[in-house]
Image 1 (tube, rainbow, N blue to C red):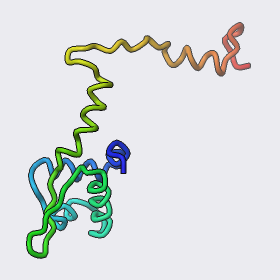
Image 2: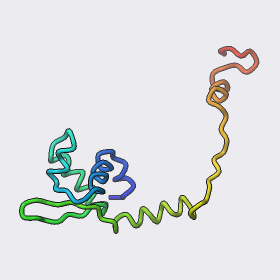
Image 3: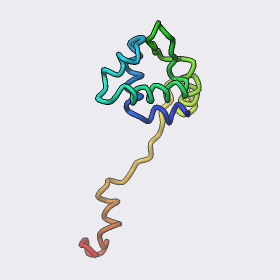
Image 4: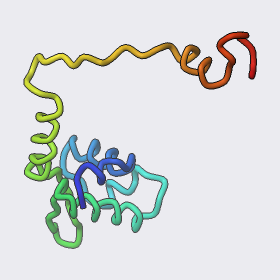
Length: 114
């Protein structure tokens, strides 16, 4: 699964935020969500498929951690989009929303509804 698509889910982003504080078992992670442990396990599986988390066994528990190697392609893509440090991006000026709507809904000559 693609890392960017995987990060589109807010539950998966929250799991990564929790793991950014250190390793956690699947059960510890599941306690942070109002969903079944099986549902959290599916999210963890998606994160593993995207190589954003790694897992190790500790007796009967599975311990998850962030897999920094999996973030490398995403980091590289973000660098190409952002450009070099200190670069500013020019955002074209937009007309105010009321000007845009006026053309779509109002007759320009009368100022009223068509």
